[in-house]
Structure formats: structure tokens, C-alpha cells
Image 1: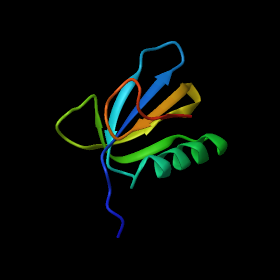
Image 2 (image 1 turned 90 degrees about the horizontal axis):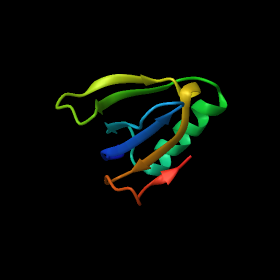
Image 3 (image 1 turned 90 degrees about the vertical axis):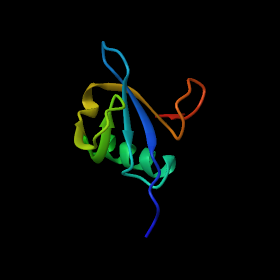
Length: 86
């Protein structure tokens, strides 16, 4: 079984401020970006089953409507200069 790492995902929605989500749904940034790109190509939402919105203490399931997102950053640490953009 592949070990999961905690990733910081920053979503920039149309006409809004960035939304930060921490998730352990993926084994690394590459898998997360591949999943996001596939969801965009298929015009569907991104479903996260183990996510913490805005650094909350408890994990919850989260659905992100990617139709309203302009860009996504995926990183293993929280920094303005780290991560990849889609």
C-alpha cells in the first residue's frame, strides 16, 4: 500500500479569494495534479475524502466544483514559491 502524504491544495476561484485545503487523499503532488487534470477534462467536481478546510482539526469529505476554479496549487509545504500550478 502506498503511503499518503499531507498536501496543501490552494484553489483560486473565479472572482474570489484563495481557498486552502489540506488533504491526505494522494501519495504525492503528481498524483493529485493528475487527478485534478482528469476531473477538469471530464468536467466533473473533485472529490476529496480526507480533507481539512482552512486547517480545521477534523477531516471531512469535500467536493470542489472545478468549473469555478481558475488555478490550483499543490504543495507539500505552505509557501508562496512552492508547488505546481495547473
